Amino acid sequence: MLHMAVVRSRHAHAGIIKIAVEAARGLPGVAAVLTAPDLPEIKRSMPAAYGGSFKGRAFQVPVLAHERVRYVGEGVAIVLAESAYAAADGAQAVEIEYEPLPVASDTEAAVTAQPPVHEWPDNTTLPVGAHYGDVEKAWGQCDVVVSERIRHPRIAGAALETRGALAYHDAETGALTIWSSTQNPYSLRDSLATVLEMPAEQIRVMVPDVGGGFGPKGSIYPEEMLVAAAALKTDRPVKWISGRGEDLMTSGHDRDQVHEARVGFKSDGTILAVDDSFLADVGAYPIEGEGLTLNTVNHFCAPYRVANFRSAGKSVVTNKTLNGAYRGAGRPEANFVMERLMDIGARRLRLDPAELRRRNLVQPTEMPYKPGLIYKDGTPIAYDPADFPASFDRALTILGYHEWRGRQKDQQHGPRRLGIGVSCYAQGSGLGPYEGATVRVDPSGKVYVFIGVTAQGQGHATTLAQIAADELGANFDDVIVQAGDTTQFPFGMGTGGSRVMANSGPAVAQTAREVKRTFASSAVRLSWWACRARVSPSRGSPWPPSSRRRSSRSASRGSTPAPISIPPRSRGPSAPRPRWWRWTSSPAMRACSPMPWRTTRDAPSTRPSSRGSFRAARCRGSRPASWKSWSTTRRVSS
Image (cartoon, rainbow, N blue to C red):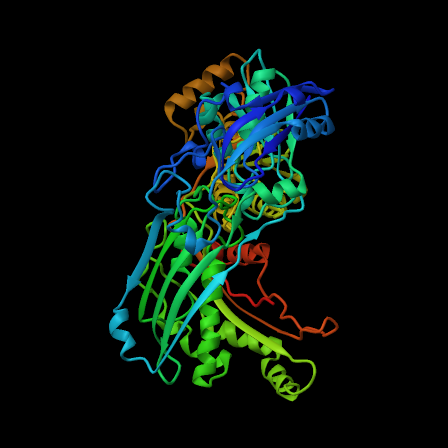
């Protein structure tokens, strides 16, 4: 097996003049040093998810940069060696001559920076927006208007396990197998098929247990393409494991947004208008499209009644690491800005922050509440059922909110101050459009559940096994959930957005019910044949004459009719399509002191377990509430 190291750019923006690889090729243990021209196996640049095309202005993401680098850490060459240490030594020996170019690093200044990061008039792309009501007219009716410029800083996820991939090629069959720590093996398979121009049926992607994903591992990266191309070129297995610093430079970043936002209130605290414009720094390549920025638009004032709303944003490309869908993926930025404005508004209005929020929460009597926005999947947003005020008040009670306010007042002139934070949110999750499942029962009674979603620590093997066992009446220990192999199940949409229980859960349940009906039908037919062998046709029979004739012929030959057997492997595929996203809501609050020895009191979670919800729903003879269209789960979190 060969180990791969990637030679990466040390410049944020530069032209490549020369790549000198001779010294690296002469090092002990180094098998090959390859640049973009040395890899004809790579036929195309990086595609969008599932091998598709990117949205917005045209751009290309090179598998290996060969003319220009656009961020620190972009791959320029690869070194293949007999050990990871030899590969690292070889990567250090590669010398690259650059011509530095101006760097676009500040989000706002990058809009008009020259030269542009890509061959565009400026560095913006993918405008998004939404509005309802009359915002301009509403400003004249406001008693207090709060406006702020707020920046959410850039962050990078750090999963316990960094990214990695291994590829090997079977020359006899032509099959290419890739092991990867991805969150979406089917998107990786189709992207490999596009880049290598191979049939997807010849590519097998396998995903082992993965130590954390959190969204960035749902993107497709050049390294998977490189190990696959190197395996095809050398006809040897090729392995790459990212280092911690390498992972920080190359895995998708997120959250970098700058907002100019205004909220208008009446004197009693009622929100009359919200207006927001923002820029989202998406790094050198806007590979995530407008999905994340649309999340920002649609979640900006999600739990509150707002009569007039307007939001507009743009993606800005800069010389930074490419963007990724990190936890929440555009939603936390919106929540941060809105909740900050609510706190400032409470001070201006001389209202308690909790009271201001309570006055503006969507009321149960307004359900189903339709704010007038269209979600990114084209579906009108609606909340139903939900009781936001009750959830909020329960959180305040559990925290002991008024007690903490009293303690805060007592300590306001002391050396240690006490801070109390309150926030509310509602978010769309459980994204579709669908997931499937296959359930098989073998002759020993073992149940195999095949699914198209992989786990990074969520416990799918437990929760989905519980569903299958309950539907089939099987022992939980006899149910085996298998995932992470594109040859065992035809297609899946990946893990992310709290979607597995909302999509794969119903698929497993529906498939298990179909298998159970198959068994029941086979059992009835088995009993019917057994009765036929005992009933004499001459005394009359409830079965048709043709059946009696076949039975008579069998009896006359002195034989007993063989019963219809249950198939040794009963299976049933299913892929239900959910109609809408699910929306969950939650208030969150924390009381804390800046001193490290200060005790904090957190509100415990009261979210019901999926198994309890499932059992309760089955007892009522209906589907779990969490599977209904637009259901809301309320919880209290710290």
